[in-house]
Amino acid sequence: MKEFLSEDFLLQTETAKRLYFDYAASMPVIDYHNHLPPDEIAENKTFENLYTIWLKGDHYKWRAMRANGVAEEFITGAADDYTKFRHWAATAPYTMRNPLYHWSHMELKNPFGVTDLLSEKTAEKIYRDCNAQLPKLSTQALLQHYKVDVLCTTDDPADSLEHHRTIATNPFGTRVLPTFRPDRAMAVDNPEMFNSFVNKLSGVINKDINKFDDLLDALQGRHTYFHEAGCRLSDHGLSTFYFTPAGSRELETIFHNARNHGTVTPYENAQFKTAVLMAVCTWNQERGWAQQFHVGAIRNNNSRLLHRVGADAGVDSIGDWQVAEAMSAFFDALDKNDKLAKTVVYNLNPSYNEVFATMAGNFQDGTVPGKIQFGSGWWFLDQKDGMEKQMNALSNMGLLSRFVGMLTDSRSFLSYSRHEYFRRILCNLIGNDVEQGELPNDIAWLGKMVQDICYYNAKAYFGF
Image (cartoon, rainbow, N blue to C red; front, side):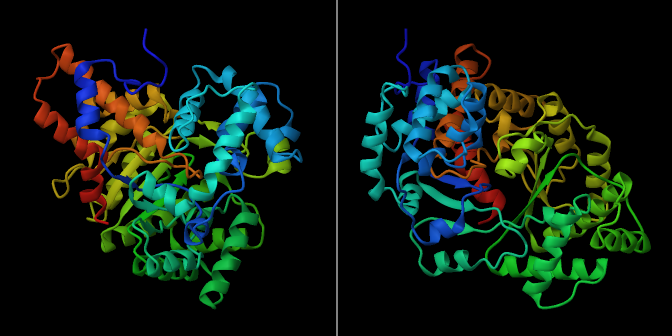
């Protein structure tokens, strides 16, 4: 029987261990998509206690605590930090076989060196021991500890990027680059959000935005601004893909209806989103950027918690929209005009894994290895089973060897253990194939393949 979380954690064969320890473990990290706050990096923030660095804002843990019968007061409510942490510690043993059990103990082990199992009995000691280390574990120190070479934050087009400029003029070893995320510019189905964004954008550019073309001009100007700040990626969170072209008069009508808090039909919403996305994707190709599409989440399901806690309360789930035809038409419209940029598509519904993997293969054009990427297991799928299924689908339908690998997609500076988790799973997947005679025992080639997936493919693909 193997010990839990030993050096050989998740590595079931000797080949897997060799691939991991000799090739994967020491590779730097390119985290090309996360939600880390750039202001906390710029100011090199330190954290008050283990709750604030680890539990505050972590809706994965919130969901588990609610499922374990913990009252909201001890999750997002008025209880003090240690009390909230103690309720999480009491929940932890009940998360066995949920990925939170692995992630939590990996995050305690690295960087804190804690190997005790988290529980209500060990909560006080773990809290005290970790808190004692926090003064040395600033945001920049943690990024260096985890060997993060490049990280890309997620940024609104109206953001000033002042914190990115501060970091660029005060380098510390990790490049911190912005990502262009124009979701609110398309949110005509949510007029309050859309108008808040347009008003803010108008103030940033110091110019009125009175029609649809004004909005596109403003966004294109911000795209240029982001490019000059080192941005080479856009990101788009979509429930599903849209491809419903519209004429300029129709788009002006939709714009004005949304600006006046009028009714925007689902068809008009699809028209507007199609138009804005097509424009941004065209600029991406012209500037040599890559683009990411995160597809399939149904958000804010629980209106009670949405009103109490706000967005990202931990009440999102997997959606089940039809996606293939619109995705095909959208990519084809760009491709036939030579405007399809390097593209990464992430799927949240595992029943669509093969759909996404085969769609990526339709639009490879020989200009860039793996130009269209079936992205890593995302959100509810960034665990062992989800990662294995994503890599198996990619292997069966495309080229795993050209995969750009893992990202954190997290708001926590402790989430870089996800890269270790992914690398162990990758090496175990390949190692098992070798030991079963399904792959040759060519360690030099397989080791190179592992290092490419862990680091070099992303470095070449994104061109940071």
